[in-house]
Length: 380
Image (cartoon, rainbow, N blue to C red; front, side):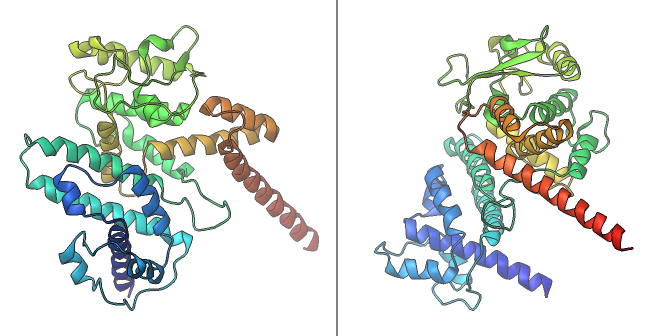
């Protein structure tokens, strides 16, 4: 029974994708042949359509004037694409995340199947690898964090147990460490420490300039870079937040210095650019390579959440920050100001309010349970 339900859920997710492609006039085969997949705006629309029932989507297709152009005619025919599915029913916001995950897996399979038929030197090979990474990351970033509505659980973060598991695995001496080379092990552990310790975005991490790290004061300046002439990467990892100075403790400072001295400095190509994190060979680490680090981590540890990515560690930092503010007794309004500054948000940003609301809900839950326990003790 469970396998049947799982299979039906998977097929319904794919049907949503195919209906969406018909509505948008998208041919996935044609896109892939051009080294393309989905644009950011289309990913946004796809995430929104995943909240609709299949009945609603089919009705939209029937009303549309777009000529029928299937994105995957063979697969669609197998699913009974043109027929009214007995599986069709209203969907809830909570199921949108599952649909997006299944769609991401399908697009990953579809792209990799195309890559297997291309030689590495083919002009479309590198483009497909890059677009696969960017599109899948964009889709997974739009997976709702929880099953509730009205602002409940919209951010995904790692539990304390999952964080401990990550630390166990990424230790350079850990037998579970998925990376073989000494440089990769040291760099990837440091990457996780920067993400969980400072809460920086993926683009900010890849743009860290060693010239802006002050080891005397243990501070780093995070700046926005647009079309940086010093950045040789085809897709530059630009930051989306405000410039700011972030403090780091002595342990992170020592680990960062050790990485620069014992690993980064040994690559001649690393002397040609100022970026902290480098690939094997010395070139600046790119977005695709960073995503692969987390893919390897998830594959090595299937017990970790299947959406562990840099943005999830940023959400985790925010949850950890809320706990630290609880422990210190910081007033909510001051907590919001400090969070906005450290995250690089404008003082008027609503994002900080989202995290503060979650912290308030946690405090309210704790207070309610404590009151209930006191009531139980009185009646015993």
